[in-house]
Length: 321
Ligand SMILES: O=P(O)(O)OC[C@H]1O[C@](O)(COP(=O)(O)O)[C@@H](O)[C@@H]1O
Ligand SMILES: [Mg+2]
Ligand SMILES: [Mg+2]
Image: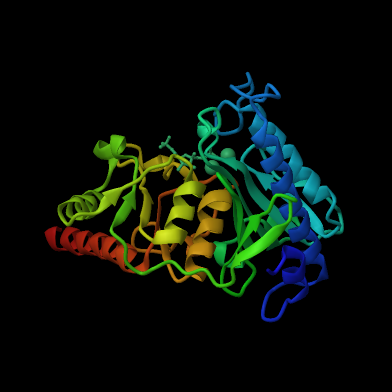
């Protein structure tokens, strides 16, 4: 089987250069460390919440803080990294003055699932940015995007400019390639949405879900976007976290830079689609590091149906004026 190291050596058609290989190797190493910490976290007293809240006003878990430190350390070990941006940090952190790549990450996604022993993950992307002013760029500027899912298996899912590759951690802590060209099937009768927020959905989402239920779709909601994404990679379907129609100014629940964009790039690279309504996630021009956006992604034909539902409503609204 191809090891992650062998894969890093064969760079044909990818964006990988010597510097990016070091960055990616160190990120992969960080996910191995986080995976290790998670395995024994309740034995090591790493459960519950801390008294600290992050810039988003969310109570940090000890493992949010530890995972953030591990990812930051991976950045410090990489001489070409200029800045780190994280869900758990107020603003960007300068790493190496002469670096040229920023690493952007959600160190632990789905951390409300930690104490119940349900899959969580790390989401990351790498962009070119020598100065802090170059960090806010749209998702098409991502060179590398990926996530690690920490479940029954630890899986690393990556795009480096040539499709999507999946690696699984073996008992010796070595990532082995388990998919050389992962694809998201274009159609699947399964959706993921937090149905408790039904009253906050817009009409396009509400009508899609109603029709999906009427036509025999199944529902799954893990509460860790990484885990929901990984299911979609394996058997298709869609994930939706629309904006709250009662609080349009909030933008949505998920964060553009370190949640929506990396997942958006992976999904598109696997033949799926990722939108916020009638436009694509990857084309949003960011205005701030922790900006929130609506997120809809997954099997292409299903996402196209949702996008059509948004367009129909725009046409109806224009006709009513
Ligand atoms: O509790 P809700 O509203 O269903 O939200 C679940 C969503 O929140 C998130 O957990 C946010 O991620 P963090 O744990 O990194 O804050 C997503 O992974 C998930 O899809
Ligand atoms: Mg998250
Ligand atoms: Mg997080």
